Amino acid sequence: MTPRPRVRPDAKCPLRPGQPCTLCQLGVTGPQDCGLVRLVMEDDELREGLHRFQVAARRREGGGAPA
Ligand code: SF4
Image (cartoon, rainbow, N blue to C red; front, top):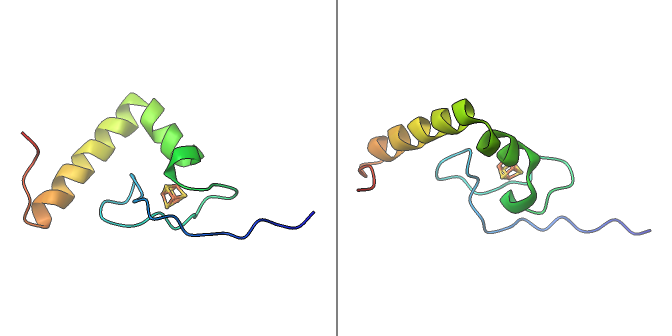
């Protein structure tokens, strides 16, 4: 069986604000099937921490929190 070529997706990584998905997890095709993203999104505390991190990142970049 020939291995599938790894094509970098255009999608952004939900865990790294402003950064593209780099397929850092084994066997993923993007954020949609990333186990790490799923793990974070399914955990209330991790999801809340990610939200705070994203808000802080937007503020650093000069954007505000969404209304
Ligand atoms: S594979 Fe998952 S954790 Fe890695 S960059 Fe892509 S979305 Fe982010």
